Image 1: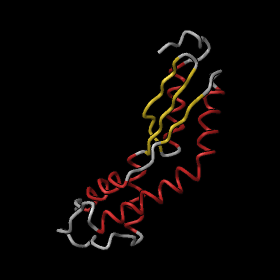
Image 2: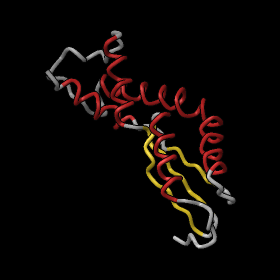
Image 3: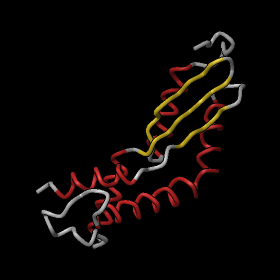
Length: 143
């Protein structure tokens, strides 16, 4: 990375502030790259938030049709997979897509506050149903 053109930008402060912002908004910073004045920030949903969301859904009785069957398959042909697809779609729609403008303003504002003069590209990775199924499997197999 070439940071020579950014003498006023304290990367450790930006990194810490970005990590804090991401954590407050349910994300992990997967990538922070600054090169020739171009900045790329890639955020991913925080696994703990995803697990908490799944636990709340299960606790409220929103369970896969095969939830009580300890021997039910947990693959792409199961009721659990269908549930995972629905949960991932809902998560992405309500926590990522519906808030894109807020997330964009928050990250750009953070960089502006820390004196970053260049453009900031923000990528937010969506939750994949396989991630939901992974967390669901862990919860199902927990006594």
